Length: 189
Image 1 (cartoon, rainbow, N blue to C red):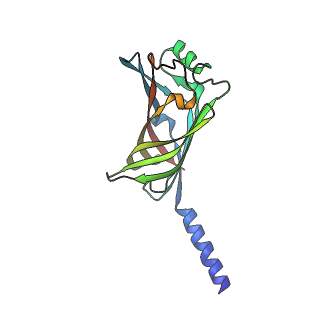
Image 2 (tube, rainbow, N blue to C red; image 1 turned 45 degrees about the horizontal axis):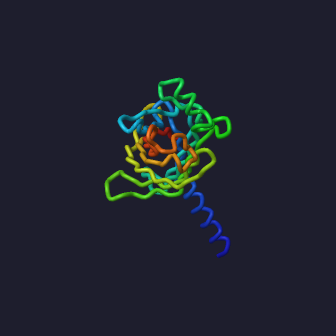
Image 3 (cartoon, rainbow, N blue to C red; image 1 turned 45 degrees about the vertical axis):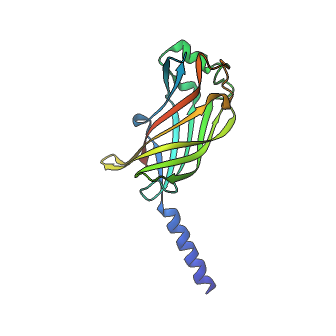
């Protein structure tokens, strides 16, 4: 009996592990974007060009999925070289001391709306980790000659002061709220 229970437990563990699918972000079909108000009258848009990301799913839905991302902060791009260099400095991201920012999920919850989720996790910028919630629109899975792809859009807003990005502390010239909009396509591994 003991041996039968052990074999059954191993079979269930194997099936549970087998059901997990590993995905890797496809940087050619993804983008990590942000925008922030400028002078209270307009917005500055930017993006990060270098990042890695992994997703683990159980089946074809995002239920119980887990995300893990690392972004090379030095790759910031607002299409203005002087501004990008200023953003890399100690006034903002201090990339020499904090070269990466990261996000690691801890749960994902389906909403009342079809294919929409709330993604909970921890965002680390400049050595400060804060809980964030992304609104996720799941685009689904497509199969082609290049393999399986999974797509989604995720969005959240953070307060830059929470991460010690406190240049312009009055937020008159540069707003405090940063909207992060991420378009992601993952390739099945």
